[in-house]
Image (cartoon, rainbow, N blue to C red):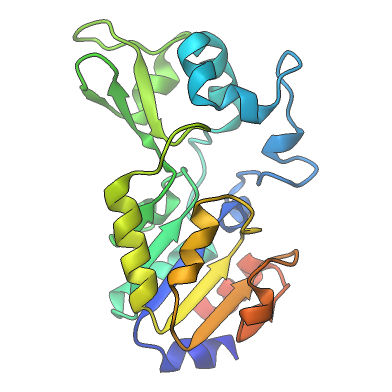
Length: 236
């Protein structure tokens, strides 16, 4: 049925969360080995990954960030590859992702709205110079700007920070214009991202997730199967 929905759709938008990247070796948030299972000196991930903690303890922030949020060897999986093919056919109008791993762009997609930012974009807080992920990975302790010595901050949305205005507008515009919205790998428990679904007025809402989500009752199709296997079949 999913293939039939895709075949008849002209403006598909994909809304994805952490579950999209687990097949690439990146843990999700709420599984037994997920991010929320980690502790750091008695602190929770939500505390460490907050705006205030970054400003007060950038050394501790970066120690946790490098250990648990960066997976430089991760590669696009079947989900990313299929979405690239859909974009090439001009059926996929946009990818709205909560992930910061950059795998959708690594797969070749151009219409990507990274609403929580990306580990691949890093900026000096003093002179705003840009630095790639390699700069952060190769640094010892706090990454600092080679031009002015300022602290480099990853362009990821921390707890206590707002979403980028223009990324948000673009994502909501694509969702509102879609005839099919595929929601995958997300529990839809993180706001304001989850509320983006309220802009969808199209024909087919597809939900692919291991656990129930708030969108299930409105969905045309709900799939609980392994996401990577589903998209492997679509790739065939």
